[in-house]
Amino acid sequence: MRFALLPILFCICFLQFLQAQVPIRTDVYPWKGKGDLMFEGSGAVLSRQSLIGHTLNGAKSKKFNAGANGHELFFIIKDGPIQVSLGDKTYELEKGSIVFVLPGEEVVFRNKRKDAVEFYEMQMQSASPDLQRGQSAGPSFVIDWNDMVYKPHERGGVRQLFDRKTVHTNRFDIHITSLNPGLSSHPPHTHKNEEIILMLDGEGEMVHGDKKRMLYTGGAAWVETMIPHNITNTGKRPAVYFAIQWN
Image (cartoon, rainbow, N blue to C red; front, side, top):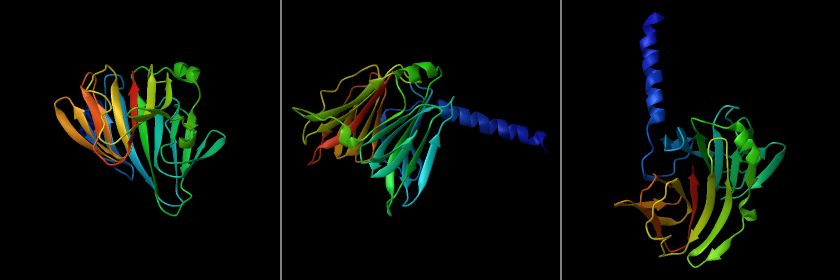
């Protein structure tokens, strides 16, 4: 009986392997809460990357720890406030705040409200991790929305969060754009880096090559390398979105 199970176990493992290797395709992925995947797969740089939407009910907590040889974790608060404990510090984070966690470290999210809060979890893993590179670039960290520096420009404004090396990337770059109604981010352009556009608030029309897709509050757009793209704010209020790149 034990040997009869081996082919079944092999098939399960093989299917899991194939699933992890499926490339993420350029598209728009809507918000999914309650721990559901928005997307998962491989890219040009990362062997595995996923974006998960979490809904944390009132008076509940959730712990994350990938292990010393595991993936890096990046969180965005979609709807706060939420209490976050990282290392020996505890923070009260508002909507738009972020948390970056190196492999082997632990972070705990606690909802002190009666109603639910929501946040994103992004996992990143490469085939060639470099723990020393990530640790040399700096420790795990939190940036509260209220501490982010806003710089206005002719189309709206920008908050540049960080641009640094990590364990699984040579460069991890994140900024938040505020785009005024009726305006485009820029003419459709291409770049070598893959990119995620995550709509924190508002809506917009994403150009992906020869396709157009609507991106609404909570959703995320994945853009493959060298795909022409831009976003136009089709709403009546500023569209606020994260632009996330890595190489």
